[in-house]
Image 1 (tube, rainbow, N blue to C red):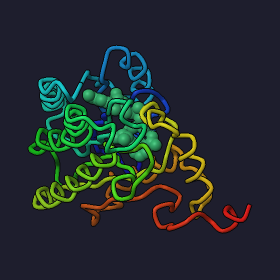
Image 2: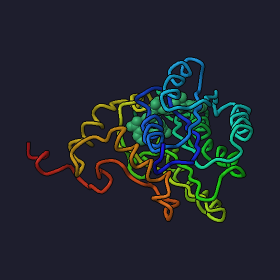
Image 3: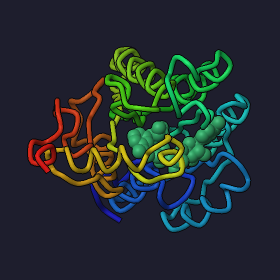
Image 4: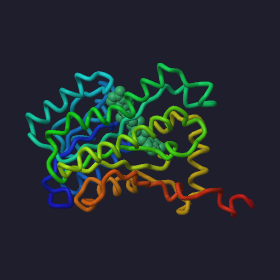
Length: 265
Ligand code: NAD
C-alpha cells in the first residue's frame, strides 16, 4: 500500500491489547504502508498481540521482557537477520508496582521498586536505542511515550512521574547522540487513556474526568489522536523535529487552573 510510511520498517514494543497506545500508533502507521514487527511481554499477552499483529500485516512477532536483557538482544538479532536495517522503533513500555501509585510519594516509594521502575520504564528506551543504533537508516525515528506527571505533580502518579522525567531527559540526550546519523528521537506525552497501565494509577477515573473537563478541547484523547501524532513523529513529515516532548492531551498542559465555568458550577 502506498502512503506516508511506504517503504519504512519499524518495531512496535508495548502492545498488550487493542486498547494499548502502541496499538493506536501501529494501526496509524500500518494504514500508511509501514511494515511492522511487534514484541510482547509474556505468553499470556502474546495471545492478544499475535492476532493484532496479523491484522496489521506483520509476520514478525517476538517475545521481549526488558527485564531480561537477552530477550532485547534477541529481538534485534532477529530484525538484523530478517530486515538488515530499520526505520523506526516505538517504545510504549511502562511498569511500576501498583501499590506505589497510591498515597504520598514520600511514604510509599521503596528503593527496590524505584530502581525496577526506572529500569523498565526509562532505561529500557536507552537500551533499545543502543541495540537499534547500527541498524537505523538515515531519516529514522525513535519514539517513546510519556505523561505530564513528569513535570507537574499528579496525585498518585508518584514514582512513575519521577521516572518519566528521566525518560524525557533520555530523549534529549539520545536526540543529541543520534542527530549525527540523521536519526530523530522524540516523546509523545499523551493525556490519560483507559489502558491496562493507565488503570493502575489510583483514582485514575477522577484524573481522567478532571483533565477532560479542564483541558482547552474539553475532551479526552483517544487512540486515533495519539496514532495521528505518532504517525507524524515517525514519518518524514516531522523531518526537522528531534528531542521534542510532544503533548497530545487536548491542551491540558498549558492550563494553570480549572476552567471558571467548572469552578462556578
Ligand atoms: P498498556 O498496559 O497497554 O501498555 C503498557 C505496556 O508495557 C504493555 O504492553 C506491557 O506488556 C509493557 N511492559 C511492561 N513491563 C514490561 C517489561 N518488563 N518488558 C516489556 N514490556 C513491558 O498501557 P499504555 O497506557 O498503552 O502504556 C504505554 C505507554 O504509554 C507507557 O509508557 C505509559 O506510561 C504511557 N502513557 C500512558 C498513558 C495513559 O493514560 N494510559 C498516558 C501517557 C503515557
